[in-house]
Amino acid sequence: MKKISKLPTILGLVILIFGVIAGVVLINSQQVFKIGADTEAIPKNVRVSNLTDSSATVTWTTDIESSGFIKWGETPSLLNKTVLDDSNNKSLVHSVNISGISPSSQIYFKINSNSKDYDNNKTPWSLTTLATKQESQNSLIASGTILKTNASTPARAIVYLTINGTVVSALSSDEGNYLIPLSNYFANISDTTAVEISVQGGSGNTTQAVIYPRSIKFIPTMILGRSYDFRTAVENNSNQLPESTLSVPESVEVSSRFEVAKTEKPNEEVKGISIDSIDEGEIITTTDPEFFGTGPANEQIEIQIESELQTAIIEADSKGTWKWSPPNNLEPGEHKVTLKWKDTSGIIRILTRTFIVSAAEGPAFESTSSATLAPSPSATATPASAGTTSATLKPTPETGSLTPTLGLFIMGMGLLFGSVFIFKQHA
Image (spheres, rainbow, N blue to C red):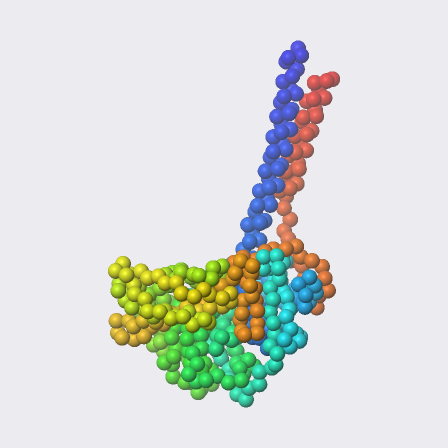
């Protein structure tokens, strides 16, 4: 009888162990799910622009629509001020203007995205304001419209203009329009200065263009995912934005033949020249990068690196590939690589990529000669801390989950059944 009575005890222990294992697995699976969901809200493409003696703009993108704000202060350990995102609703693109900073002052900041703080590898980002305010006698303004890749829907995007190494930006409206008052940041701009335009639309959608100041007041409409050269655009003195023209066969989608004043150069039409080793705005951790890409076989290409000017003439091999490394190591900060070549029609083509060199110890990113920003390939999440804030923030409610309760219920049932069998054994 004693041998037979051991069976309920063994069965009770099996149920108990099963209950404990099931509960642990369910709770851990919930934690993994939460971690996966949070990573989509990590700030990417963090940049500083619109720098003055008393203010600056911080912009970033996220892979999912999220809300955010900036925590900042004058010391890394005391970020006791907050500024809300200019996007009132959840968005893929984010822009925050920080004001009330003293001239020549360094401040530190973190980004709160979807109620979680992110920093630059456990240290805050930083920037330094200008010493004096730029005075301008002109009222130069840049404006235009951004469309999504379907060439018809307005795009919510961040538009950057780089002029002589200084970066200014604006967030486009829900209608896709943007306006940048250049006179707030530049005393004078030469007519021969090439203005670089970079657009971040979120989810990896970007656009690059180049234009001269004479046409910058009304920049032609741009579509995300394409490249443009507007240097031949005619100055528009009217009060209306330039209109884009469509010339589309009935059997072809509108987005595949969209044209803007005959100056549009889609990426797929750049005669096979490409830079495959680096993306626009990418952050790299080596000071000795190797650039490579594709091009027509035996085609000569002029390659140039800025801000430290290094130039070379390279040639694609017989297989249509090229590669090149700058002879001198690059300093930490923002750089630009430019390819120039002639296509089969004899027209000079230009392809550019801006990128950031970040050393292992996390050196500063220089958006201008006086601004510093320390970027990293991925932001680090830190627990949100309570502090003095200058804005009232509504907490984001979280939907409840029954998974922990279910796990505890299973564990409890296992303990209950095990106790019952053990009790009967000894009764």
